[in-house]
Amino acid sequence: MKQELQKFIKESNLPEKHRQTIKFLAESIEKDAINEFTSKTFLFDGDPGIGKTYFVENIITKFNLPILFLGPYKFNHKRSMQCKSLKELLENTIKKKEAIVFIDDLQNSLKIEYNNGEMVLADSERKLFLKLLEHIKNSNKRKFLFITLNDEDILEESWIDRIETRIGLDAPKEKSKKLFLSEKYSKFMKKSLIKDVAEKSIGYNFRNIDDLVKMAYREGNGIINRGSIQKAFSSYTPTSMERYHIIHKPNLNFKDVMGNEKLKGELFFLKQYIKHPRLFQKNGIERSNVMIFSGPPGTGKTYMAKALAGELEIPLVNFNAINFLSGGPVFGVFRIAKLARKFRNCVILVDELDKLIGQEILSEDKEVLGALESEIDGVREKTNAIMIFTMNNKARFGSAFHDRIPCFNFEYPNESERRIFLENKIKKSEISFSQEQINCLVRETENKSYRQIDKIWNNILFRLMDKEDTVIKNNKIMADSPALEESINETLGFLSNSKVNLTMFG
Image 1 (cartoon, one colour):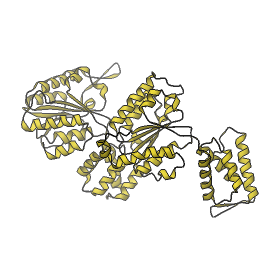
Image 2: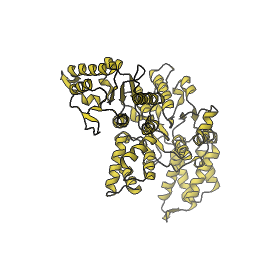
Image 3: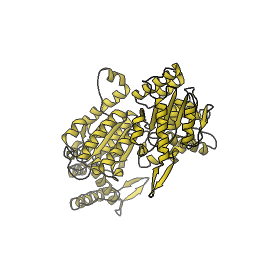
Image 4: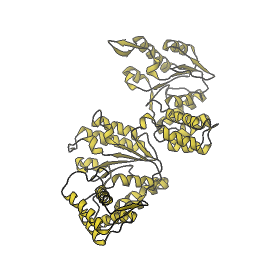
């Protein structure tokens, strides 16, 4: 097999079984040893823009066979022939002694008719396509069919039975993106810049990367450098990524997180795994890349996820489960799992999973729970990312769910943790609190989350700034002790008599 084809297959995101199928095909073509064990018909499906056409082109142009092409664009290759219709494609396939037949974007390459206002495949096209499949399958010559497809709804049972190998493609890995950028833009971009774009374009497909680089070229007035790439990243967001927040370099780590020492210790092994993956594999040590952070709102679940990403020095992709409510919870679960499989080498944070599920306590036989368990198993197998679900009440999921996924509990801060939290805020503010005032705040914030304590602190400062004798100078609040005492008492008094939010700023 040609070295360049071997390299391309190795750096692709194909599952191993499909890599072996393509390798076997390449070796069979080279040796002219086509037999009953050689797959002759291939279907590549997946979301638009993930690189199906790019992938197929890179394979078939290395086989040294004539190419018959049908598709919505012009395919430029020295041994290719463009066909205008499926009928013309079939006639030329029959005439050729050997050929690669390539139908790109199947649903837009076949003729569609309107039947009672609905778009349906023309019956004549259906028959022609079946003839093409049968001819290639029964031919003892070097004839092969490659198809790309965006919408699987067009597939019919009779077609599926005749297509030998169906390959679903996910978003490209970093290696594939680097290869794509090198082939297309090496004249304009240094190797270090190509590597940087490949790493930062989390969740991007090949079409997104193309758009990004073109934008960088325009931003740099004909020059692509780190500055123009940074501007492009700031300006361009793929449509599929608009709902998500990506932090490329989280500026937090475990030392910034107060409390939860046991949890930090348990999560620390992930750092060792990333540093020494082969050592873990050699000794049969498995890591769970899917976990649950459970606890009341404001107890630091999201903060811990950001700290984990910072500790591991990998990006954080954050999205909220409530963005997937349309279509119902089962469909929302499928969409989340599909997205998770797009991301690699990052921490994926899915906030408020229980809001997607709904209000009901879930028993073990609930459909949505079964879907969630099944999809999470798929995510575990198909992504190298660390996926974290946050929820407020883990009791709403059955015991089978918790047996499969590690669950880490977050609780309200204890007295020591509240004291450290408040003393840090006091130190930064440079306001003189007495020990008695600090003790009072620690005592009165029992069974409060960090978020709630933050709101209490904010209200004390807002009330203090509103006092007549308070002076604000050089970003510092200067007030006397009675004014501070009054602000604390007012805030704590309001807190004890109100169930509403303490402040619109909280």
